[in-house]
Length: 237
Image (cartoon, rainbow, N blue to C red; front, side, top):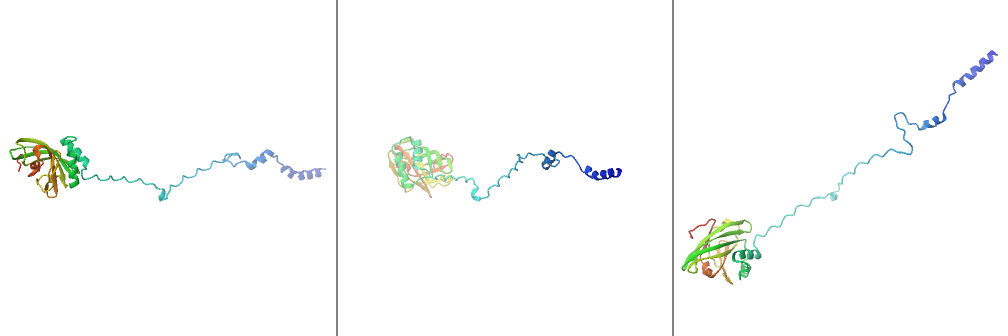
């Protein structure tokens, strides 16, 4: 009996040692339990996708824009137009002076457009022959304004003193300094329109056409020469 009990104990001992208790819920969840140190993320959620890198800038030359270059202004005219000259002359003789616009139009038709003009006054005195003094401002289309004084002999003035205004068209004066010299009477056309007279004076390529008005400034008053200077002078020669 003792031997039988001992054999039965030996036979049942391994079986007893191999038996362990298992929780069925734990066994099922073991397959989905994350390793230590990792978060337990539900199946119905996914990690956010990494943001894509920004697109590379376009390298197509046609897609590249360039700033338009600044436009170069057109050069201004180097001569005075008819309307400019009529307006300036009316500033000397008075607006609407009869025959003035027609005279300037005629001169421009024959001689072309000047690149300068002088607006000024003259005074002189004579019995038959005498002296003339003038002063004004040279307006050069490119070089701007400069003072102008002139002297010269006069023929044809009325007896006694006389004063008046003058407007001088200046051609081919490319350097204002070249004005300051003597201009003898030339062989150009003389003009008579309304109460105005104009004559032709020349030195080299520079041409002057003085326009005068009044009884005392007949064509004979333009005979002789005009000597210009930057400062007023009293000797006429």
